[in-house]
Amino acid sequence: ETGVTQTPRHLVMGMTNKKSLKCEQHLGHNAMYWYKQSAKKPLELMFVYNFKEQTENNSVPSRFSPECPNSSHLFLHLHTLQPEDSALYLCASSQGEPNSPLHFGNGTRLTVT
Amino acid sequence: AQSVAQPEDQVNVAEGNPLTVKCTYSVSGNPYLFWYVQYPNRGLQFLLKYITGDNLVKGSYGFEAEFNKSQTSFHLKKPSALVSDSALYFCAVKSGQTGANNLFFGTGTRLTVIP
Image (tube, rainbow over the protein chains, first blue to last red):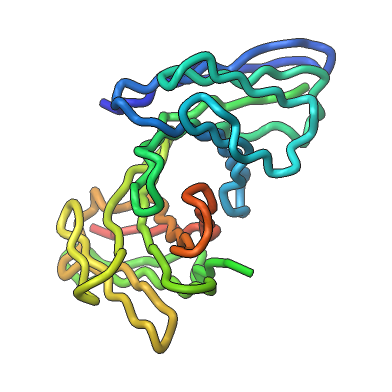
């Protein structure tokens, strides 16, 4: 069983809705990440938090808003999304050092209608 | 610029035969290299990594990978494939010169092991 838990597993939302994705890690890691996985494309790094501070924002549209209240929890707030935002959103955590592997959750499958 | 190439979208191999999943990379400075596996409806799972030292790295589930600096490759291998190895495999690279956050993934290779 993964040490990184994501909820919900599936989410269908309209373009005018507001929803949030939740991620919790039980591994004592310092860094947490949001990735977007679309078919036939490399994983896209969206946001990184180290010790609750955002250290990376890869030109992500403002309709995606991350929140990291502590080192164990990470949220991704969604509003006025587009159909092309439909994808698998993966949360990951790591020790935060360059050679530390990432530990991923099982993802939230998002469909925007 | 940093990048990872997985030239094969799909690899098919018979059960019991050796398997190879290819990966080449481009990175500034010394690379940190990783392999991950993704089963259906799951997140990615870490298999193995190369940081420094021996070019042959051993990882989980009997997998190993060979780092070749001159060819900038990091191919994943297993001597005898199992049906349960069927999954999506991702190679990833990080530069030792940049921050810890810049991990670049390939597009993935789907491995199918045929009984």
